[in-house]
Image (cartoon, rainbow, N blue to C red; front, side, top):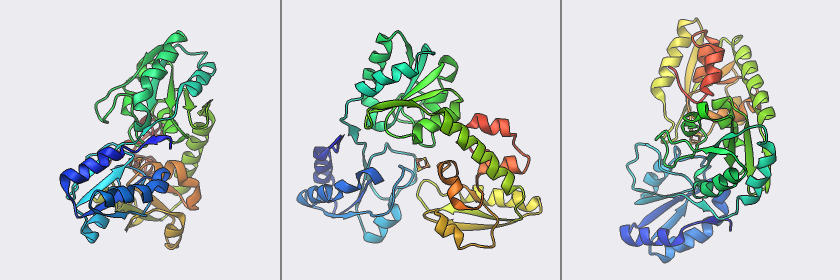
Length: 334
Ligand code: SF4
């Protein structure tokens, strides 16, 4: 196992709180260890129930499921706490990676040759390894910057929707090095800072730049906004996840659309999928008020435009495309 599941911490927490029922929530990449963790919870004296729903972030605490089941404790794996109104006791286990990052970071040096001032960013899984990455970069003669804007738990940490630590050092750096798996977070860094971003992926043991994909996403988003300009009927989506419910924003954007002579209906759903939206055949375009990554990462799969709030403002002429590019799509300007 390349992650530390902090099993002792889990057992100690259950022994301390003595819950009758524990609702266990894991991100997609860790669902395979659910039976093992459930067995540990049972050994510690509680009844474990594993949430089988998708979980993409700390914004998605399984509060309603826990309440329906009468759970006394939610154990949420893989994310740092987020400010979410929760009335079920919740314990977070962050899950640190055990895999070595050195090979991938060393390989990244060849992609960073043109730049001297490097911003280091990562996910919670690798924050404890940033010093190793820093040493490798410094030994190669680079100046290294790690941002701390104070919005997320650790310096250098980014979330899929919060790149404040990267943005806080943007003026000081030539390029970023993202340490971690996949393109998801690195793409957000590149979009929100408009700086070259290199991925050092310790799981693939390789390093590569992400500029091409970023350019493609920007073009797709412009295409969606242009397409939505032709739409007459809009569906405004409210997402029923504990940290994503934005009914006020949905109501405001509905009013703006109506003021522009367009028709808008608010829809509430837990998971936004192409098949869920396909049912609403009378709708020309959708506005997503929740996770900004839905439109950015999966936009082309929905068949019809799926715009963020900021993209809707560009469509209505209330926000300039250049300002949207600067925001990296992660802010909300209603
Ligand atoms: S809103 Fe989206 S990107 Fe942000 S934490 Fe939730 S799932 Fe991740």
